Image 1 (tube, one colour):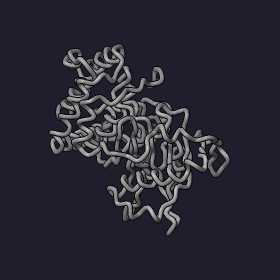
Image 2: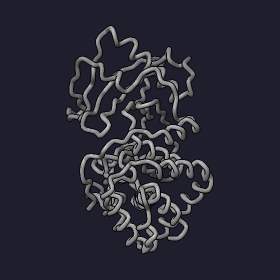
Image 3: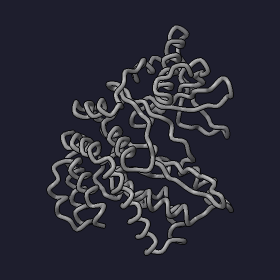
Image 4: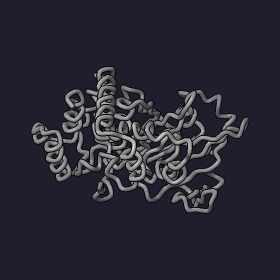
Length: 340
């Protein structure tokens, strides 16, 4: 069973990481900061359609602040979605601003609606944490998913990743007659491999979404991480393997029923091959990111010691014991994708 030790320590973005973000277009001037959104003067609990507490609270601003904050939020959304084309702003309204106070970064979630067709979307504004930025960037480089986010000093803006959260999928869709258990199991194996190879932790069922796409005669599944705070931070290797979280047990049981050891191995090799190809395609960018990680203090020393020892045993490779930081550990883990 995977257990998270304590609440994660937040880390500031280092000068080297900032240079990387500037170079690759992630650092941009923004009209509003994370701290500006804390100027609310009231908040109420947000309930879902069934009356359940969502653990988010809707915040309200004084009339004197409201227009400026909402206009700036629309400009940020335009920058995130249309590369700064603000002509779309006139069709948008800010429906709601919510805060999640229990999460590590106390994120704000902004709901944006289009006046023309009532379609709505979300994005997030958070206190920038270096671990999360490394996690987002590794996801963008090494996974099949494109990640849209920008930073500005201590502010992080992220797109909303649409999908059914794993816990709701287990609750509402796992017994669906149209479920393709083999395809779902295959995708979970590949997701598990992606997380372990790049050391993204805490992927229990609330921290990933499942995207269901109808194919011409069946359904295709994609599992995507939506929380990147636990990028190469925790001490235990099992924290980086979604298969060890009890919240994911229902999906694991489906896999045990429909997968053979041979097919599991095959899908692991397939995913490592895909990761290897992405590493080759983004060799320079990845190398610069890893170099920044190596020079960054984004871990607790005791966590590094335990993780090195556990990975050394797992891979039967003593090179892990020579790693001086989490950047070294991630680099060695990635370098082994072609060997296992």
